Amino acid sequence: MPDPLTPPEPEYAALCRASAKIGADPMLIQAAGGNTSIKDGNVMWIKASGTLLADALDKDVFVAVDLPDMRRAVAGGEGRADQPAEFALVRGGLRPSIETSLHAVFGQKVVMHAHCVHTLAHAVRKDCRALMQAPLDGLNWGIVDYVKPGANLARLVSAVAKGPVNVVVLQNHGIIVAGETVAQTRALMMDVHERLRVDPSAPVTPDLTALASLVRGSEFTLPDYALLHQLALDPARLKQATGGSLYPDHVIFCGIGATALQDGETPDQAAAKLVNAGAPAPAFLIVPGKGVVVRRDASGANHALIRCLVDVLLRVPADADLNYLTDAQNYELLNWDAEKYRSTLNG
Image (tube, rainbow, N blue to C red; front, side, top):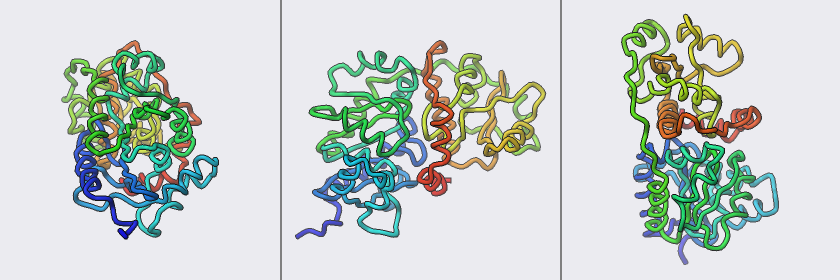
């Protein structure tokens, strides 16, 4: 008999290839976000928390979990469903993704979850349900309201993902698709990605001279990704960016919302004000009318999620009514041990 902890080939190799490809595309995945999985009998192989899909061909990023036990825990409303490490078939190594339960509730063999920028440009809007009806027409899809990633979200998805439904939009979060083969599932994800495609607004020229002067001798510098400056150059987009948090990974890796400098304030002064108020040091700051500055010691994950914010907001109309996370939703993410673990691994 085959070893139950031997990944199912050749589909596992196909999953690694597909995972690496989507993981390298910042329009689909940012930092340690997103995850993929494949089921083989009573075992589900899923991306480990804090690992990168982009590394799937070079590193062991998947862990095996007890699929029937996880499904029982989710269906029974058990608290342990939010402790995916309890379901790992090999203890002491990497932890299964915090979204293991989300994959387990699908009957299909292969599941892929992404934080697709085009999906987010729709899913952060209050009118997202109506907005997506036309572009997703003909697909077997559903949508669920935002809740913190984990077992409660999995239960909401389980109620929607019945029968032929194999696409579920997660409000303020992303997209999850399912299929019987890796090729079929990736093709479905890319189909949704293209159907929801939104062209970005035309960029405006930032004031790089003023920004360079502002950051001289400070803890901040100019970003490599030039489009970040667009957060500062349109009053409506500035208001959207500073209005609050739009999806979980921004909160985890960049803190709550975004901060704009006040008139006459330096970046270091703005950062110190936030830290003195009990907030973490900001990964970036918006300089209204000028551009964006980032911390010199910002991590790769910080940069990826700052980029995601501008990539999303460049595809959201200035007059769109956005659905921001509440204070309670922000703080439950910041105080979540599972996310602290993931953030530490991906610092």
